[in-house]
Length: 121
Length: 110
Image (cartoon, rainbow over all chains, first blue to last red):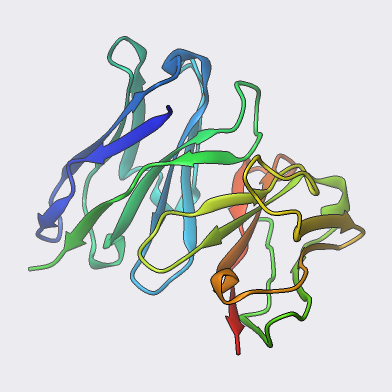
């Protein structure tokens, strides 16, 4: 069965960095677009990125451009999110998600359990 | 950038029909997906491509999309339907191409 497992979250001081990972299993990782979405405490869902199956194209939210970097390693069945220059407002649960089908934009049918990033001094 | 507007909350009694709207300019020309999220859990896709249901989602969940409004309809609501619901589209028309989520609607079953 399809599984997505995020890791790498934790407590970081403002201005610090963190690298999140998302390991996929139960499907051919290299066939699917993948995404990162976050949710601040008590808030709604915020989309961060959508990366093409071969990693050649990444769409990302303006709100994090220049600070967050998105990548994938299909050989390792993994998706990555590098968070730099972290701010208190980046405190959130970070989810990775997979499209329902291998085509473009079919809805996020699979989600990880999320990993919590807390930015605080 | 493209904006999706949802009512913050909808409340109704068990057995009634919930209609959760998602407003956006010419949203009828876009493909809309809907998610259900219960406290402490990851979201679950309940409607995709405007009106289709993933396997395992009850027939009570349905969707429509036309003009400037998409609607998620939940018939005969149950206590277990109490959750936050989010609509979602792909915005390929603006300079900032990407996914857009609505602000979410909290469904309360009285």
